[in-house]
Length: 121
Image: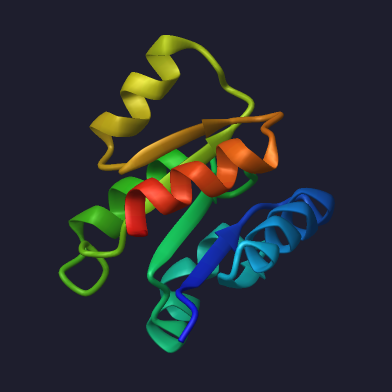
């Protein structure tokens, strides 16, 4: 059974790209554009990993990561932040919020799939 990945990104093009790369690598991927619905979808889908964009309207990825990691129900789900914020301080801050990994946009398929594989196998 393929491991399920929830992609949370407000850009449909980015979501489609990540979904395609992950499915080609043998993962099952579903996408969500509304960061306010992560918990609702995660409760239903039970993903093995969440790929989380950082810059989104309404709730940024840092906030969402922090909320998920503080939640008893979702804290065990690994999170990889995916962002165009490429400063060392951004990566540090993301990991401080509980993220298990950080991928910088634009990324190659090898970078994205490699980080997913590193985190969940």
